[in-house]
Length: 392
Image (cartoon, rainbow, N blue to C red; front, side, top):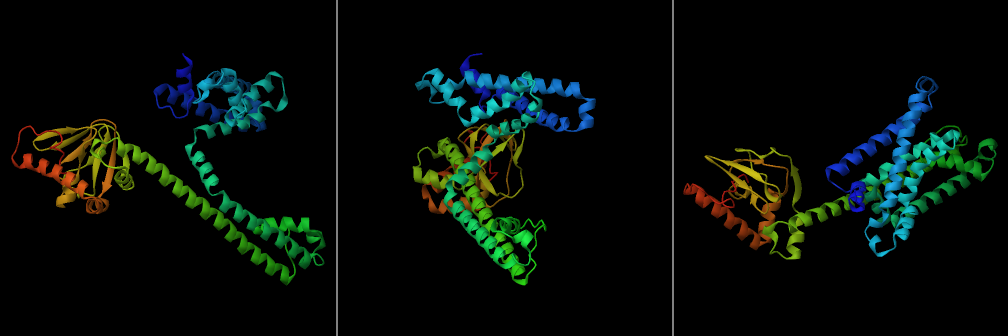
């Protein structure tokens, strides 16, 4: 296997069957390794299955050592690595976060060969191997990076409230409860537990003023964490919308119907369309149901079951607009002939878009008229573009 193909096999974004099989094996071995780590700490299980655990641990460790070596070999294939010597690309990868993580994943085997006692305990680092395959965590990292100023501002407020609460608790409680509040560092533990609303109850103020302070600190803690949660939730929602928009933009740009539109129109359309994936044989719309949206075909083919004929539409066509224009029930059933990707336009957005973009309205109405014309004349062999049923 050449290095380019090997790099594709190890890539988290590869979609071919070999890459998916490797990821499945990788994830299964990570889960198995963590399960063995947990089982090894149970004395009864360890005594009964010691040999089996040792063999399994060795096999999983060998796999991750092999993975580390393979990733080191294909490091020059990383985008941009072709402009550097191979040794420098490998050194750069070795010192990167992913390289250090893979090295840590290979260390349990090396520790085992050295007969180091806590080797299996070190295998807990394997759980972090899932990070490479988690796009959601990558999105969260971008959210934190974009919102870092707001998060740091709230963190500063948290620290200010924390230290102020510890100082006041020391002043109010040091005489009544010297063991728990005899110093500001000691009072700081109470402030942390109270501000985070954990409430262990191991340190409790006894004076009325101290209890009043505790109530204020609890409410402040709720407000601080609510601010953090709100900032992260808003940032995550914005990041999700951005990724969705980028994906939709790419899909819209690939539909021939939109090729002649300017960037501003495509941007407006992309904000309204919603990608939908359908497996082979899935019913996209059914005859007689109410029309809620129309569809643009990005990839794949659909079969429109019109009586007494069947029409097949492929990439670049659209269907479902007639029911939106006429407000009549669907006049055909549409099935996915193979796995296909569609862009759905909701009925409300459809009419709003037609009002804002007359050029789109004319094109869609012209196509609808063409489809209705042959249907009324009972033409025996309508062209695919004309037969895009009314399932709108």
